[in-house]
Length: 228
Image (cartoon, rainbow, N blue to C red; front, side):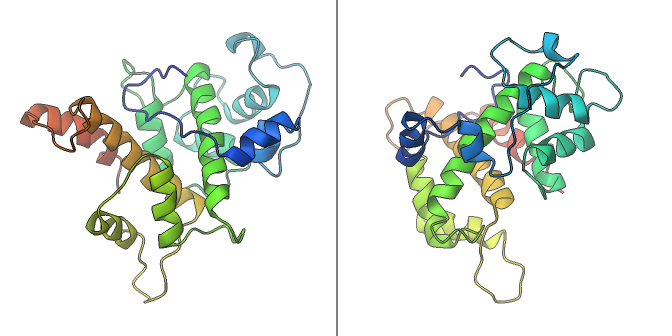
């Protein structure tokens, strides 16, 4: 898939279980969104999307675009994703998604139809990865499951880095840190995005890269600029 924004990480590869479900005739949408119910009604927004766009994507965009601007801003994107089965996405994650998927030349944090389709389809693949490693179907992912998921994404993190990531979601109660899908999506997008940016400067995959200060800042800031 070709992304409109250079900061958006590539979508993770689908797990084998998902590929098998596709062979068995199961829809990618029912796999990613358990509450998904297909709709076939005509939409006045259809002309804004390519013909192959799934009608559920069009429906959620149209329902959330309250001012009929043809764009989704922060609160509207939250509603659109909620309609697609992503309830409880944090404000911080919503802003991160807006920042890395927005139209590059647009100074406003908002998504048009093309960007929304890219995000929507990519989230389905992140959901598939989360479901694969949430083996007990608790809706949570522990530290070991997170490490395995990162490995699947091609990110072999040092123990110190992994522990640092997990500590960011520690609520201070002393309980075991478990990540919900929202937290997994946030840290997964950042880790995969930064790893891909680093590899652009390490073509030999040596694990080392020489970066100028400007390149370093341009690589990191987009992924942390939306933090509270």
